[in-house]
Image 1 (tube, rainbow, N blue to C red):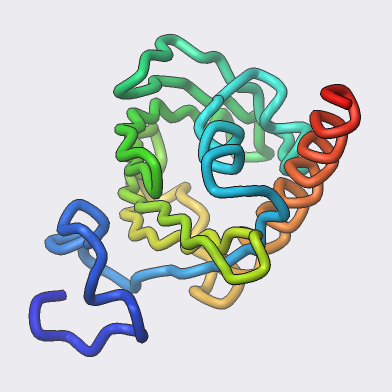
Image 2: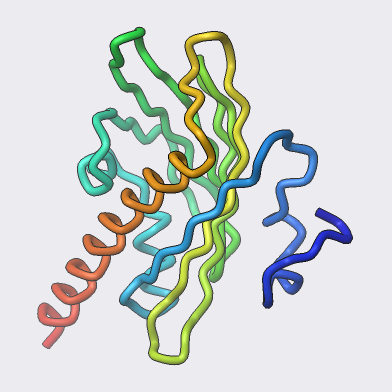
Length: 173
């Protein structure tokens, strides 16, 4: 991406957020998170086995490691063509972002997540990723379809985050 035209404000992002060297299209989705930056960051990076239900997924998640610097988890999903398995290593870059590297039996991917505080106190999430299908059975959806399904998942996650944030505010009163 060196020298490439970036969206306004994107040129200030740290180098780790760029996906240089990954082939294929760069996918991009945004979501508005109705919580302050620090709260949204903690919520988004607190990986758990309940995550698939929050995003409407049919997969299972097992968290193998969680620390202040990184998380490691595996996802498993049964499909008509067999199992999809992946292991993700997430590196945290508080307070604004985190990076994910994923390797599975049908795909490998790299993603960067960046949170930007907005004037109204909410947060915009920018998710950018690239992926490489592995083998002939890998689902090869169009760029538009991938972004549509990811946007829908992040809308569900943003709604769950907003509910949890409202609940946390009423519990502390």
